[in-house]
Length: 207
Image 1: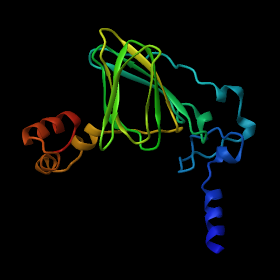
Image 2 (image 1 turned 135 degrees about the vertical axis):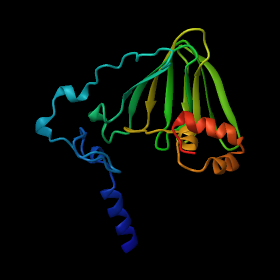
Image 3 (image 1 turned 30 degrees about the vertical axis):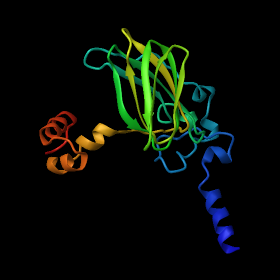
Image 4 (image 1 turned 60 degrees about the vertical axis):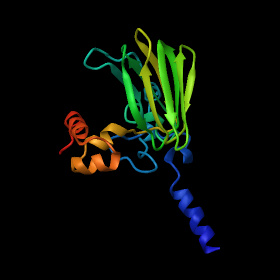
């Protein structure tokens, strides 16, 4: 019985602020916690807190063919504790979002214009599809996934996440922006040592 009571108490204490209240606009001046940001005082909340401006196309060019316009909790504090967020993705021709994961969120991609080849990997299978305007694809939480502008012009999409702060882990950054010895990375990835050194130089890793 004591164990059950302790479990119930832990569940209550670990519940997000927004699930206890109707909402909890984040006080982003405070520190984030596993249950979200502390709530902004209700007396300081206005209608503007529930509106996000600037969800428009990002700047893409030859040196930066990918632009992400996020509406996560740090940009849109009203999302705090609600388990949802959004972003806009713009890809110039040839633009690529490399392999990455969102450990804490499922992602839904809604194609607005252009053509995007998107897919994700599991330990046993690979799922990919060429998508056009009006198509949607879902990336289950934690799955390694990618997006590539496979068309002849620009492409754009709306992204939604099942977390107010989905985070991201890029595979290339994890592998090549670290200070592990290059020969160790080569051994554990089965890549050629020269290629590992080249990639470390590109991603800012130390040899």
